[in-house]
Length: 251
Picture: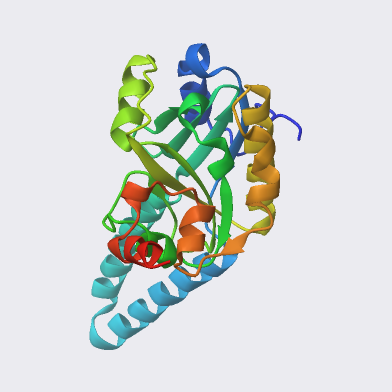
């Protein structure tokens, strides 16, 4: 896979600044992946917006409709700007993943904290992933987008461990503090590209099990909320839902 050109449309100014900030610890930037809005998502948002404005037009004055339309448009633009700013940077010795929106700071994850054979490509909604985990609430390691039905997952450090590394650049092995990271991609092609980039970077950095990434992750798998699915994601036992642990105990 070719390395990302610095002039790529995905390598925004903030991406380049963040990559430079982590260059001493994570090396050079290899690839940038983002989950931009699909044409379908844009169409749905535009349709809902038009419908709401049309309803307002039947029940209000022209001035009221204009004020509402401008206000709602600005709110939607801000929300979508933040939601669509999720990116995953593949560097030589680690990843940077999270929101690149204004005033937000993404997480740095060294490859030494990534379980290489756990890299997986999944297809479908995010609900099965949530049901597989014991903690089904919001998580900073879940970087998903509502409009995406494809994700790449891996087992890595908890968000707290990653944030500590992001601040200090000092790595300390903490294998008992792991979580499942989930990153949405736009489509099947981008999913495959990201898996190949991760496999190459993990292999070049000498991570154990890196050669298993491609045969394990591809083709993408649709999850069915089973023990086999949890095993496929390499989900640690303590992170699995109680129902899965019960099922595993009955076999």
